[in-house]
Image (cartoon, one colour):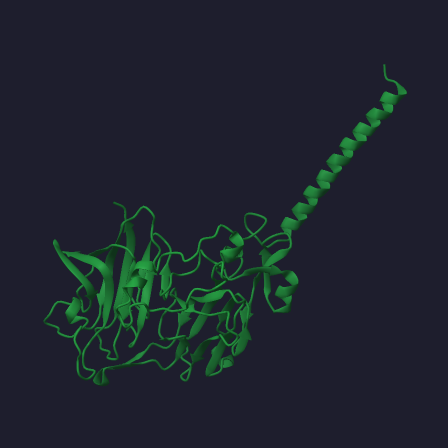
Amino acid sequence: MLTLTNFWLLILTVGSLESSVTSETIKNDEMKLFEERLPRRGGLFHTCFSNEYAEEGSSSCMPRSKCVSQGGNVKGFCNFYEVCCETKVDCNSITKEKRVVIKSASLQKTPNFCSYRMQPFNTQVCQVLIEFKTLELQPPILEAMQSSLECEDHVVIGDFMLCGENSGQHLYVPFDGSKDDTELIIKFALPNKWSQSQWHLIVTQLECPKTSEDKKRSPSYMPFINSNNLDNLRTMFTIPYNSNNKNTLGDIDLLAPLGCNQYFTQSEGQIKSFNYKPDGSGYYLSKMNYVICIKPVKAAKMIRYQVEKFSLSKQNTEEPGFDNNCHSYKQVDGDDRREDYLMIPQSSLTTNGTIIMATHYCGQSLVKGSSVIASPPYVLYFSSDGHSDAEESGFLINYSFKII
C-alpha cells in the first residue's frame, strides 16, 4: 500500500536520479565540446614534445596567456590548465624560452647576417639541444690546389661551423644557466645568398637534475682532446646524482652524457658525418673534433657498426688505414701530416674473414659491408685536420646492439 510518506520518498528518489543523470549528461556534453575544439588526433591531452600538430614536437607546455604574450601558437592542450605552445623566433632576436623554432624566411627577407640569441630559461639549464629538421646551405668549395675547403654561406653554433647538407643531424652544446652572462648565439652568414638555402631548427634548453648541494654538472666536453683523460671514458655514462624526487630530475631523458656532442638514444640507427651525401659529392669539413655517443641497451654487452660508406684521407696511401697511419703518437714538424680519423675505442674489425684489432680508422679501411664490434662505453670520436681533398666524402654507418 502506497502511503503519502512513501509517495513523497519515491518522488524525491526519482528526482535525485534524474538530477544525477542530467548532471552526468551535462558533464559529458561539456567534455565532448571541450574535446571537439581541440586540434588533435587521439587523446584529450598531448605530450607537447610529441604533439602531432606542432612542427615535429616543437612545442612546450605553458599557460595560454603566456603563449599568446610571447607570440606563440597554441597547438592543443597538455592538461586542463595549460596548452602546447609553439614559439617561433625571428632573425636577430633574443629569447629565454625553453623550446623554440628557428625557421628561415624567404631569402629576399633574410639579411646577409642573421643571429638568434638564446639566454637561460632558468638556472638549472646545463645543455642546449639543436635538432636540424632541415639545414641546407651552400655546399663547401674545395680548392684542390690549396688543399682547402671553404664554407662561404654557413652557420656557427658554439665551436661548430657548418655548411652544405645537414638535415636530420643534431648537436648538444654545454650551457651554464647559473651564470647571468651565459648565451648561445646561432649565427648565419649568407654572403652569397645561395638560392636553395633553408633551415628549420628546434632548439631546446635542457635542465640538469638538482643535487643536494644544488650544483650543476660541469659543462666540459670533448673528453678525448689532450688525451690522457681516460676517466671520462669510464664515467661519461654514469649518473652523478641519486634522487627519487621527480621534481629534481630535470630533463634526464633528453640529456646527453658529459662530453657528447651527438647522442643517439635508439637501440639501432644510422650515423653519418656532417655534409654527407650518398653520391659521394659532399665533403666533411676541416678542423672538426667531436664526440658521438650511443645510449646503452641494458641486455647488450657489445655494439655492431655495419659500414655503408667510409672515405677519409690518410697519410700514406700504400699503408692500411689503421692507427699510426691515421694518428701519429710522435711529434711531427710542420703541418703536412694527414690526421683525419674515426676513433672507435675497444673495437675490432672483421673483413674478408680477417679480424683486425684497431682504434683509429682512416682512408678506405672500412669498406661497404665490413663490420666493427666494440664494447662499452659506446662512443666514436671524429677528427679532421686542416687539409682537404676529394677523398674526404665522409661516412655512413648503421649501428645495432649485440646481445650475448
